[in-house]
Length: 386
Ligand SMILES: NC(=O)c1ccc[n+]([C@@H]2O[C@H](COP(=O)([O-])OP(=O)(O)OC[C@H]3O[C@@H](n4cnc5c(N)ncnc54)[C@H](O)[C@@H]3O)[C@@H](O)[C@H]2O)c1
Image (cartoon, rainbow, N blue to C red; front, side, top):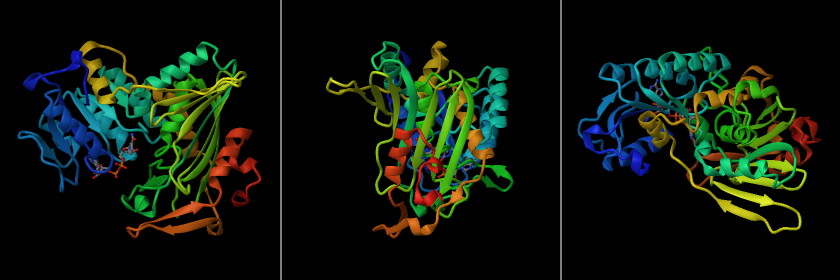
């Protein structure tokens, strides 16, 4: 992981951990748990997934289950990592917490605001811990930015923004039935750019702005588009009005020509801080001074959950701190449906493995203009929004 010395456990006394959802992103959780097991820091008690073929070799004694219910029947581990489709989160996290487990729940924690409130109640009623898998919130970089702002390094804050230009292929949307859906079989799925792949941009910007609780967000206006043949958004902007009067402008796309590093910006009267949240780098720019670039350490969220269990420390990404994010998610899933971009504005690029991606011509420039003008895509004179 690695765990720090105070959290280092050995052999049978190590906390027991289960990983639920072991393909897709869950594979990285499984591999980390295997490494921690090998180091004696945790005991990998069980895995659960309806698809248990092609697993790496598991330690002797690790139970395999087709679902969480049978895993819990076989004995509740100390902590469960849930890396399953978004619309399963609320139900599985509730079951794990009620069984007495602490939970590392992948983002977004729930598919709706209602599920979020209900899950908060379960956390309160059970006294369990629920850490949300926004791994960027484990970074010292977030605290560094907040400190520099508090020290007045960029003057008075005038606004926050976040951007991401990523690439998702047709294969990404075809890998699972829920991919690219707002709803599936009568359930909210919420698999859009702002709520899934680039959800960290929203959550990290809210953390930097000190607006993580639901009540910190006054209102949200969304502006959603899809270039791919999907129900959810893949090119999206949102203006989030914060309760303190400032606002946060987010503009993202999954139809860029190439993957760029996503970032969060704090604009101030005397300069600007840019946090490249996926790589823990902060760039501080103040006119008349060379840019100050700093790199920061990051704490693994499972290690942090286990440390909190052992020592009673506060979580780095507790469920309650995803309240502001969930207000944005709720606005995305309950607001106007994404509008289809005319295919003539997109370029189809066939990849060497036969997969293909769609490139929305000039979308990187549109994202940059949205940030500099603090405008939604529909407020810019862009051909593909007309
Ligand atoms: N933190 C990150 O950087 C990051 C990155 C990617 C995905 N994620 C999150 O991880 C979660 C999973 O995403 P994914 O892209 O890997 O999904 P996926 O559909 O590709 O994989 C999900 C896995 O869960 C299994 N599964 C489905 N229903 C299950 C159930 N009821 N019980 C147990 N297992 C079940 C599937 O068989 C599959 O193995 C999502 O919440 C996603 O947002 C987080």
